[in-house]
Image (cartoon, rainbow, N blue to C red):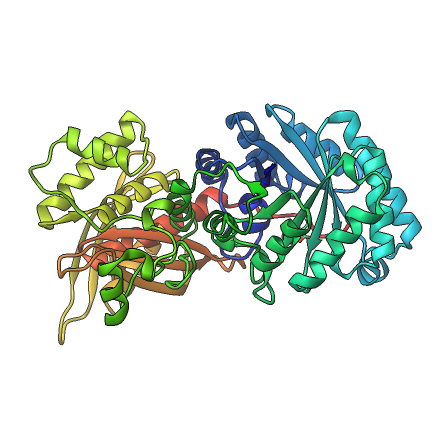
Length: 516
Ligand code: KIV
Ligand code: ZN
């Protein structure tokens, strides 16, 4: 009989924790709604005690999603668990996820506690959490470098205390598939009460083995995997959800004893929503969701695919919702066709968002003869990744050229209704535009990354600009994205997007640094 494999998504917690991937509360809620559509079973929405923003995000996600359980991470102490519960208690299916490190190296140097103390802390934390919530998960941090007898012991104790999921993290991405399979087998064979809990795994990708290790654990009997969209997460990231799910799906012949409830057709859209929110793209050759994942370049491959698709394709692009590059609409297309096309791409927009998106489409169709699915995605994602706009772009005039002093004159609409005009010269038109924006906002930024891509082929393609900026020496980088057929305008929009995001999150930095 095939058993359900629980998909625990930690994009909003472990994923968001990684530098450059931070999301504000609204962005997390948007992601959570899409994760629900994707069909994940558990959404880990954050680490409530770590900052007021994380608390608020967990609470908003808990109050918003209906089907998935919502988990919040808490260290193994009362304060964390109380705060976590406060954020989670509005959820239909709340889950408290508490953890403590169990490896010798972590217990000795980080916690400065001996193993018996750690067992007591874990037991107390799980008991305390169970008094508040029926669904408690315990994680033995750095489990793969933990003495196996000690791991069996602590797992038995926490199950006894009421944990219904025990998570075995490969915190530092150190294990290899055969070893991890053995660890899970040992737990299943040696822990007397293991039948009262689900074994979960949580693999990091430091050696590029996170997906392979997760699958090895499933082979051994783990029935929950913790993973993230696009594999984002601490350092080299976490196991990628789309890779695990599609491996099990494509190789049903090998894995016919498990199934997931993931709607694979939502995979690509979820991946794109994340990249549009964070401004960080996946590499082109990324499995399942990379730009080249279904591109057949070599002549011999193209020939094979044309004769028989399965010669070089083990899954169809449609099975993961990958867009088909189709020419979809032109400047005479009406509102109805536009809405239908967005629906078929899976986007559900509010009436107000639709109106704005339609106006943007018309604007684009005037400039560009052919409008592709990717163009529509760019419009909609831009729309969906909007943050509160302290400043928005009204007008931009550029003077530049050979022997000209690059000058930008910019008009920004402030959220109080005032329009402010200023101008600046710069090293080039983009630099001049950024400087003019800074003059108006009175905020200095240091540009750390600047990238430009064409959204589609063709000379009239829209440019997509991604910037990463450190404002006011804050110590953290904020990304922003902007689109336009004019690349200086796209750059100004990207810079403003980053600036607005910065202003939204000012004063909302993480405050956590101790271990228990
Ligand atoms: O990697 C890890 O060990 C974690 C735990 C807190 C689950 O993220
Ligand atoms: Zn982790």
